[in-house]
Image (cartoon, rainbow, N blue to C red):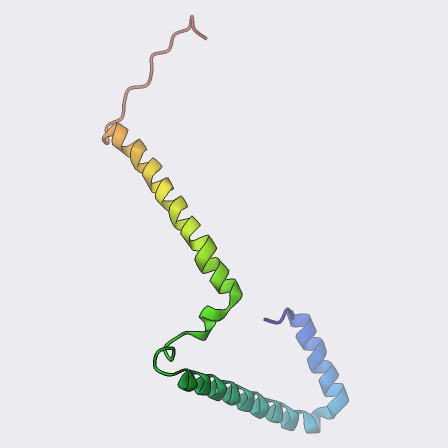
Length: 114
């Protein structure tokens, strides 16, 4: 989700330590964690309210199915991948069917044709 590496996290921590000081920093961290918990609880509650208001017909619908990226991948790319895999299996199976598990002798070498 966020593209933050380790050095950026360390820089943010040092900056927060310099700005707020070692006395206030633990209290601010706990306040931030409490705020994050409350936001998650509100999001979960809103999601549950939406499912309840949709009724039993659409209550079991997964909201991640409405994501446009997932929709495109599921409806455009997955069927193509399935067809490609079927074709690969067909051609791989055709090679196995011609040999019947027996190895054929190598062709004879003719020095005049080369």
